[in-house]
Image 1: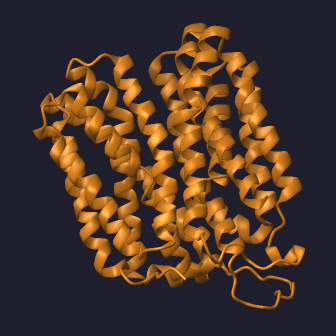
Image 2 (image 1 turned 135 degrees about the vertical axis):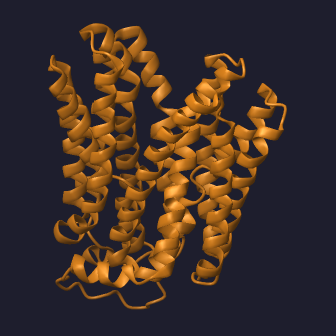
Length: 403
């Protein structure tokens, strides 16, 4: 039940996080706002998401999972629902930028990592993979349906869908989410301790103490850098620029959007598969292979015939690999830093992921303008992935052996 409520919360937050991107154009047509004005709200949203992902770990220890999750869902729902009445550009920035971004950051994979650390000793990789699949499904699978509703019935009707999901998720979190398994007389799933732990007051570790511990770890910095590269090569490059890259090759936008939709389906399969593998094989070696395969696919892409069939094969490989790095990373973080420190560590990694995505999206656009092609960006991204694979292996291999 705990995992189910968390999946629902992550799914709802992901739909709400992605919805403004789809509704920007109809909003602009109604109010006459230009693309720059609308995009400013999306930039604020990404920044707010990164900041609150960092704050979420401290809040989880101080206030508890249930309160933080419900606060995040409430902030996101308020931002989405109140936008039904917005008429000014500052309304857009406040509601879709600050509130939606901040609320989504509180219900990000930082929350999922905390739940996995508290409730699961075994199958942690699969659980994190499930949470990653929920976030992916919300961002890439459910949004096309939302876009279709908004196109036929208007953007205000489209708003109702994420609001409904957020409400159901908040109710589920309140009804089904004890803070710790010991609170309801249970052991973490797969725990070898034959006796239930005695419930006692928990004193959260201080943020300063956690920072002092993790900042001296080479593994932390390697994983942080790798996650920045992960964001740069997925959200920053492929998700942001695949459609215009295809347009340069003479492929119609509808076909290019189909490639992204196919990736969305495969990310769910890839995330669950990576979680299953993380429970059976060394997480360091898995990260080496996942980043390595991603890097090779990017490096090899410019040397193919760049036909629709070739791009479809690339999309299949890339879709399976898209979120595959999350479960082994989370497992390494939980094994090395422990359940109490893991949410803060993962918060830093999500912030690095967002920073890498933003930098890559901007750099790829500049490269397209200056060089007239996206191919150098794909080559550079592939080289970065291969660098991440080489850097992680000696630090991460053998650090986490499945029980």
